[in-house]
Length: 582
Image (cartoon, rainbow, N blue to C red; front, side, top):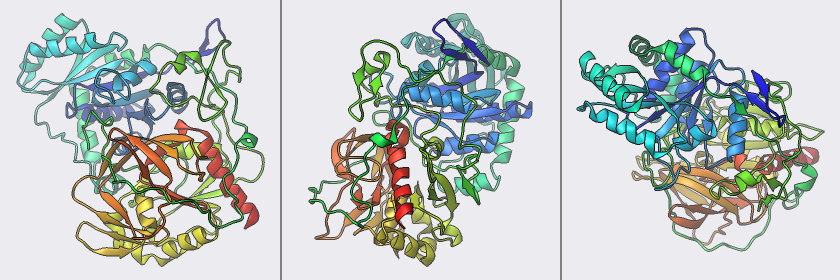
């Protein structure tokens, strides 16, 4: 599994294939799921990855493979973190299948690769399986593939699967044309109207996935892929992917160098009002703003969260499967991160779109008590990146799950609370009726317990939530505002958020990266203080966003903790401090 070069850095082999499309709707999700299930049937341990900030497709991957959902994002995280995360997450898999987003070259820029599937293909040095919709074309299919080959020489398109063929003879025509003009094999095909349409990404998918209702769809995709695709050749192509060099690790974070914010012994902090600004914001398949974001849903990762605690001796609390290379960085000049005094390798410093590179230690855990962090998790609250949860564990937290929809309140041993995004508006009456939950978070906030909420969680902390039918539901009332659902999308896109004031995750001026996707708007009561958490920068400019007061922090942005690793450590440190004084 491991080789070494002259510089001593380990080379690690990973069988992998990246499934990309010529555009959204080309069939890459169908092909991805079919291949995952087909290879899993052969007894292979398959790990799925999704490019970009998506929760729905990773939920499919987890259902098909039985492994944790994983995302790879080349804008929210640095290239070094992305590679380390990929190597660590795929260490125990026989095969990794990476599903692209939108078209292969669609991303954040009109003339660059930032945030695109192509950028991730380059970072992971993965062979690309291009999925092409060949409806109503013959030899023209070859011209399309040839153009994709020539646009970016660093992207290695290794094979093609053609989708929506009219007949076997149609397949033979496009296969011969592509192979003659492009010099790469066409390894398989799918018929048009084969009953493989993936359901629209919507709320009902999470329960449907959990109940196994999509299993027939996954099995049919596998049957058709196995029938029309040269699976041995594809597996050979994946196994021939070049070995990857494990990224050079930077020095570990010293928690002693991370100052806490405020005074944990006091319930709140005063801050001057920040000028209000019009809410701006974000839809699927909108290349100018974000790598395709779908309405998310996310089954529990294999962190053993369901019905228990993880982090002390759980499978995710330690990752011994990755060798480290020491803490020394390469000699030479270094750029300096604006968020810390840690060096950035010169090879990465020139990539202006990347967030600062920070340490990726095997564990961020300090000595001492490991606080319990209560994570709300059910059909209403399920938008969590697996590595965000893992980073909190590595920072020293023990995660304990609870479900507001099942009538549960805050776990009694909680030292902090994390309420992620989801669909609270669809379950607003159930949430409003769970007094144990609402009273629990009110009491926790009043007592100074660290409470972090994003998107759906942010909505629940408001005084009320008005659903799409116009029904008003009482919520926690911690934030002096009201949430109203609307038919038009309110926000979609990448965000870089900068702390306006010291808060649970950041000190003033520090930044995180993430994305927004929501249909609600938050309106504050007249005369109430506007204690914004962030200055949020997106495609449409900057504006203040979120709410912070004492140990309470909430916002619409779904942040990625890997974009600034000290944020995870700071959150856990606040939970530990609360435990020590309660």
